[in-house]
Length: 383
Image (cartoon, rainbow, N blue to C red; front, side, top):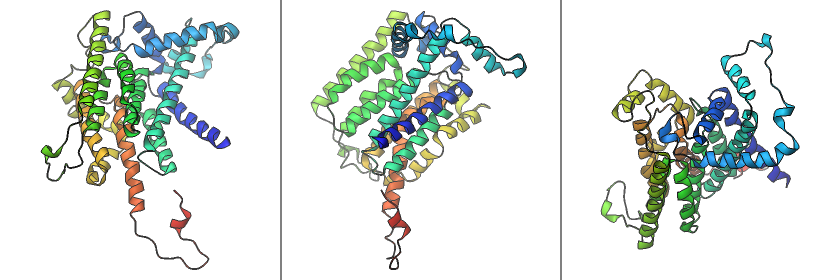
């Protein structure tokens, strides 16, 4: 029991750190006004924000519960009043935050925002640990992976409010990956995909990830590149994937019909070649590169360098998801918003790195027998 509580406490700390960074280095203070705008159908960036309605509706549901339970017992806005000391010389961001807390209703929403984001972070880390159990044996390597992910989430907060949809996206992809690696009933995707479609358009690749995972690449050789050796899955997989895409696009279209379609909002430059140039070749490109370095570090480079060593499924997932994820996002959005790259980091890149470390250790030569009464450093290491 104590052991479990200790692990829960550790994951909780890792889940709290990105929230702190989001307020301190990001734009979490804008979450309230952006949420209210979404609920009122007047989002700042109408396309695509207005169409990502799952998390706002969840927040409204949680807010209703809070108002009818906790707030009845302890009305926090009547108990707490925040004021800045005139001599404290606050930063503009601090002034903005304290001004927000003096807005009626904002404090209650902020409490709900933080609790919901904490739960999302906790869920992402827990599901990641569960997924990696099928890929990596060492418990402490998996914990190292959680530390990497927590730091990555903390670093990926530039120009970002609490963006619940991004972390729900991570949850849905993790659930999909877990269904695949644990050979669970794929019909669960009939629940996951519609929810993910309400949440964020990037869930488009969830059925694709499932379909690719059901293909047989066992006779395929990357060296010979014999594409004819690839075996496509059974008809049931084709049927389920088709149904999933029908569900996805039905919801994708329905929310745009419901709220009214508007052309995509332009931020910095239009999506397409101008955005690609901005991200890769402009004077702002170094910012994108170093923000990506802060989230990904050199993990992608290590994986590419050692690519042929990885198990087949890891290589297939990498090729199926990572290039298209990076290409589409660099083509459509400003890349220094590095939170958008967390999905491939968590379900593909970090577990590949952990597997590589574990495999490298296991393949080391067996050390010479130690002298009597002594233990080698290898014997002192437990897995």
